[in-house]
Every structure is written in C-alpha cells, then in structure tokens.
Image (tube, rainbow, N blue to C red; front, top):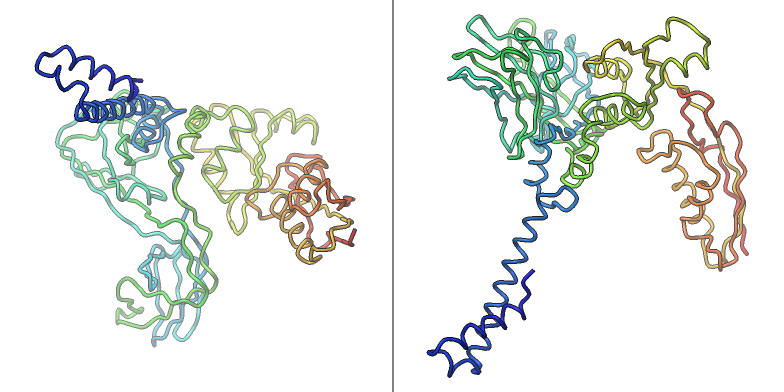
Length: 468
C-alpha cells in the first residue's frame, strides 16, 4: 500500500525536477499540496485494497459480494419463518358462513394473516382456527423466447419476505403446477421441474431446465410464481382484532358480519438469514446443498428447514440394530426424531422435507422423541452483599436456557463440567471471593438412545443458598 508520507515525498521530488516549480518546492503551498495529494493516493490505495478483499469469503463485508459468492455456490439463504397461532371467529350473521383456507385478514398494523384450514361456522357460533402470518403474492412472466435455463427473478423487495413458493406454467392448456427439483437432480428432458437460486443482485429466482435436465418452458407460455409472503418476526397480542381483507358472504350469498380476534398471542416467526450468517454458512455450502451423508448433515438440514426445532437426531441401520436387534426393516432406513415448541405436525413435515431430497435407496421413518428429565440439587454460600433471591433467579434462568425443553440455545448433552461453568457464569461464585457451591444431579441426565431428549425439570430443581 502507498502511504501518505511516501506519496507526499514522491510528489515533492517530481516538482523539484520541473523548472517552473523550483522556487516553490520549499513553500508552504507545495507542502500542503503534497500532503493533500498523499492523502488522496493513500485513500485510493486503501479503497483498492478493500475492494480486493471483497473477493475472498473470509474478508468480504458487503452483502453484494457475499450474495455473489452464494450464487456461485448455488447456496440458498434461510427463508423467514411466519408467526402462527389461533384466532376466534364469531359469526354475527343470520346464516352459516364458510371461510376458505387462505382467507386473509388484516391487523390494525396492516399485517396479513391467512387461515390454515377451511372453517364453517353456524349463525351465532364461535370457532377457533389456526392462522399464519402470510399473504399470497403472484409474480407472472411471459416467455418471449424459448431458451435453456430460463430464469425469473422475483425482485429485491419481495425476496427477503418469501416464506415459500410454488410455480405454475400455462402453455395454453391451463396452468399446471411444476415440481421443485433442487439443482435439477434426477430430472429428465421432459420433467416439468424448476430450481430455486439466489442471485448476486440479492434476489430469489426460479430456473428451468435445458431440455436435457428438465423441460424448457415454450415460447408464449406464462409462468406464475405464487409466493407466500411474510414479515417474519411479528407479534399480535391476544384479543387484538383482525379484519377481513374483502367482504364476507354467508351461505345464501348475502353480506354478513364476522368478528375475528386473536385467541392467543400470535408469534414465533423469525427473520431471513442475515448477511453475516450467510457469510459463515457459505463455508459449509456442500452440506447445505442437501447432500445428506452424516447424521450432522440431517440435523443441519432440518434445522435450516424448520428453525423452530430445538432437538433433532437421525440414525441408521447400525444404531437401530443395537437398540432393537437385527432386522431387514432397518436396511437402508433412516430414523429421524425431532422436537419443536408448539409445532403440531412436525413428524409429517420432516418426512416430507427429507423425501423431497433425491437420495437413492433410503427410506425415512419418523420416531417420536422421548422426553427424559433430570433435576439438580444446588447448595452453596454467597457473599453477604448479594440478595439470595436474585442469585437464585439468575442460576435458574441460566440452567433453563442451557437445558430447558423449549430453549433454542439448549446444550446437546449434560456434562458436569458445563453445569459448574453455567452456574459460575452468573458471577456470584468468584474463586477469590470465598463463595462456593455444590451440585447433585438426579433423574436421567444422559441419553441411552438417540431418540431421548434430555431436559431439566426446573420444578424439581432446588437452589439452597446461605451466606459466607
């Protein structure tokens, strides 16, 4: 890098060789001018060096650079997860009403919520229904020229809000749903499939085949991408009102009135993958591209698909024979278990996600997790200037975060050294202070089988503190 002082000295040396400048070389004007030129060159040199660092994943900072590397690696960032919960719907009309699945309602903050199932409500009755914070958006594109690997970009504004998408192609005989095929794997020339990609322009896009791997949409056909759009991490408090997006009619086709309120707090969503997350995750892009080989691959794949998962395990033939004995049923079979708070149909969703990955000679089977509890008896002494209840609460909170059933930061196993480190991290037991504690565990602190989820029972856990 060319530094300021070096550039300034070279500039003065150049001027000293020019006859018209000889008398001014020692002047304050030339001195300040050379400093200015030196700063300019040093700044330009710094910018060039920083731009060069953007070409490397370990030093890249700009999102555009990281997005370009994601596209090079065919990496797809994690999508936002919509909030979900239940609403209470009161039919205030004189006739029964039917609200179809996907019916949208708006909150006071103009956030959309859609029904998960179709509900029919008799006059004067109240029904509970599940809703998800999504709205349907359609992006259409007309194919003017038939070409290999035809692409449709979904826009920079919409891309960060995409929770899921489906693709329909109308070749003149009505819209037909095409199937998603990651990297067009196992696609033939006539396979009506599409692949998702993330562009260096920070946009999600869909890509079609080349006539050898996947069919090519013909010229004149219309492509419709149906997007489930979400705001991600949102909260709608219980008893807040929602309003139908369009007029509600009853069974006779007459306008009617409904009252929709949040039966519970609707939350649990999460934002899309951040720039720094993407930069770190790109180091492991082969795993993320759905090449499932090791048990940790399955774990990361499922946590990426379902960010609410706090516990997940996968095992195969060898582990199955150890637990249940030899059987042909275990051959080429992958057992999967997982737990996510407030996730009603996790098993079916997990198997559906795994089955969508083209893996030869593998069968997946869901296994319900078995919750095993352990609890602790903690005794100790703290300094006299510490409030006992505050110390006790801090210890309980730290243990709940590390081993709680619904904690997103829970540890994979219970280790004695980690238990002591967690309690000590509260700051109440410094080595030089004389404060001390001891821990005794009871229950089941370790798993004998992969489907066992070890959690702490905070109701049975006791913390008994005295003063030093």
